[in-house]
Length: 140
Image (cartoon, rainbow, N blue to C red; front, side):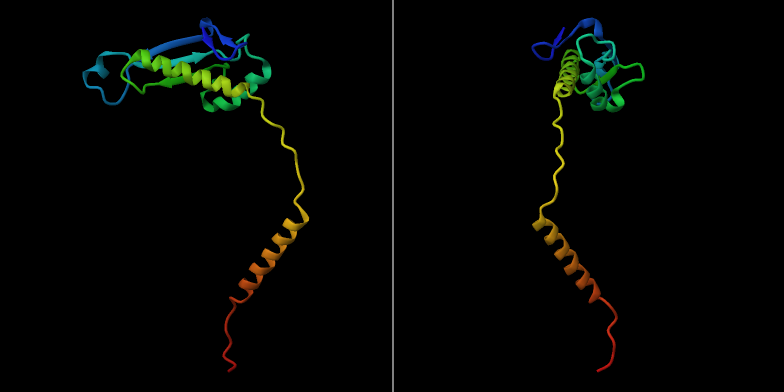
């Protein structure tokens, strides 16, 4: 069981872990021990997450979200399988926690009259600078 907030917990049946050999440094340990962790969380089928949270989670997960509605996290940072499991679970917890935050609704505002005038004055000034870049005539 993974505790996200006071009212959201993820059950063990929703998550499956598989292990593989890690790449990278580690000597003979790399060739013998399955330390890389692939954590699969069945987000779409989870009864503990509301539909808006699932929608935000899908957007946040990006390409880690599969077509059947699962999130797949792969961790192979350390040489310890137990530590990689902890990292994967913590990343999942942070992802779901971020999805629980409801985004603020943007209130559209109009630019102030002063800012509009400053913008137009800057455009005029820039146009004058560019107008001075023409060819120089030899009338003198």
